[in-house]
Image (cartoon, rainbow, N blue to C red; front, top):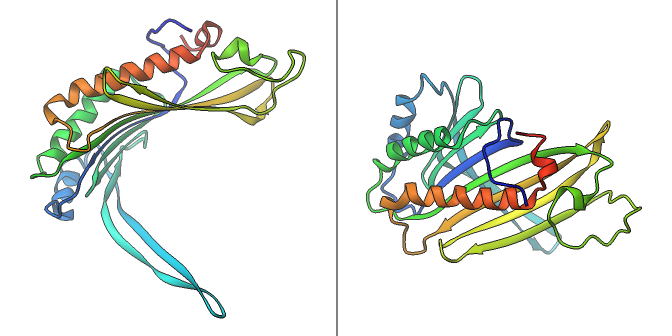
Length: 245
């Protein structure tokens, strides 16, 4: 397990925070559009979001495909350099940052700012889920052994064998903080010269079937980030972390 600390060059390819609500029909596309207009100078690239539903059924003579139904869902906006996007949807809000990732304090400050704008449009909708997801891409020497890189379960291959493909998935429940996480680790079979890439996907979330207390959103987000760090640094060895500090 590596020591938790700030990394100057984190291997994060994308960070996403999402607030999911239970729609009740009172939030409108026009209301969402009004927020999009307010931030259009900083987020000039705009597009509509839709859900697409279709179906098929088997009948005598073959399969019959039903026409697809496109339903407006909201809007997505992107910054000038397209490193940041915001989705204003009828069922929630999502904020995404691509690399180069900035520090957590700046990321969450922006996310909560968008949430404040979005939540001002809500009436009695319940906040059902807050999710924080980090996708990391780790590059290590192709000759490295799994045991030297990650704190994972048993590897069946003998030490003189190369593990060409590897994947691990786990669901973690943090009962004291009332949050959960899905952790996925897998290598890309394709190698780049002397390097091999591993993808680490950490999705930490808080569920609220009866609604999440919106007064605690900031504290919950911090809990999610803390658990993400505990899982990330707990998975990696110091040898890997040193490549990104």
